[in-house]
Image 1 (tube, rainbow, N blue to C red):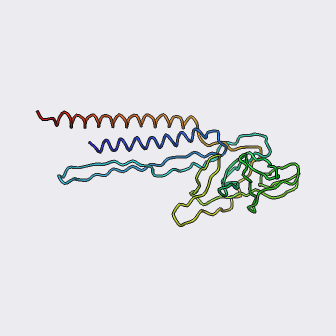
Image 2 (image 1 turned 135 degrees about the vertical axis):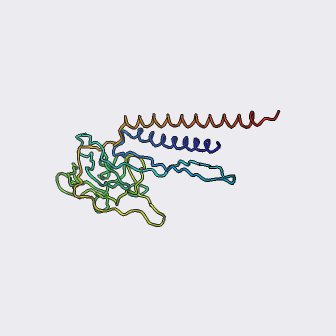
Image 3 (image 1 turned 60 degrees about the horizontal axis):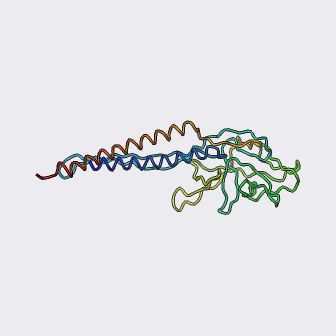
Length: 250
């Protein structure tokens, strides 16, 4: 009976974690370049006989890992020549105070030093790993990632990819950072992008979150939480009767 209370409690905790992840997906439905996060769970049922040879079962539910759905998001036409998005696999690179970060799409602009930066002010890197500088009055980017200043090529955008599965974690604002998959392995190294990957200018890549589908998931998760809560209440009521009524003497 206590195992039922434990299983219901574990189920409620799991649904809370799912709700947190689903809420984050919904909150980022308008975030440029955002990728849907999914929760992988691990369920086990252990059955064994106790010292009195009664069969005992215990169910365990826990979070296994959070994965990212890297499918291409919708291309949104903006007509801004410094809005860029990648079509195909790969990432662009920005330099932040915490190190290099990787992104799929962004609205770019020029800062006071004529550097190409994103909306947070992070410099965009060229293929040589240096901040992009525009000496002329007008900047543009072609489908191959070449950067033009008044029509003259001054560099090309850094476009990188990583071995699959990606060891990348979302940091907010459509940016991702690399992480170690195993202690001591080091961070994954960037590799060249596929020849089929192109840079779309005048477009932004929208979030690949399906808002309606995600809202339905949130409602289902809430109903599952309610069901687990009712199970916990039922078990608690039965235990209360067993202790305070059935077990009463006289």
